[in-house]
Length: 166
Image 1 (spheres, rainbow, N blue to C red):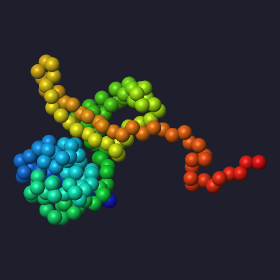
Image 2: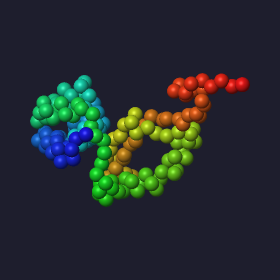
Image 3: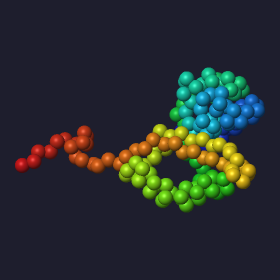
Image 4: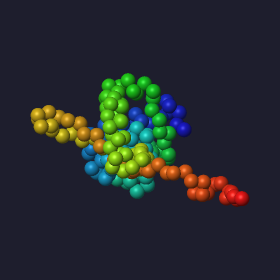
């Protein structure tokens, strides 16, 4: 696990490399074939850089050092600071999920059955569109694999020995 002050310094260095490039997260995403949110996750040390993607990211962000790229290829400690929920944009995202959550869950159940959306096999992006009134709107897309709940039958539990019945 990266120590929090060391992690903060790494994140600053990664964000400095992005700033030096003059590119947005969406620009880097277009050059690497990643989503803009995943690029941000990589630069915040919340996702692991894969070897096949490293050359594309280095090309997009030339200020990345070998040490930073090597560190980005290590599994990160995925977490967040508890104060982040007070940041207004994050607070509003949480509020939206809490407000619409029950309805979203009902529609998932209606469309797919009893299950959940994965946050591991998951894609996320943020886009800017114009609304019907001509004002800017934020589109946040969550694209997660559906995971059905399973009925827990003893016969399917491989870690348990078969029980004899009399």
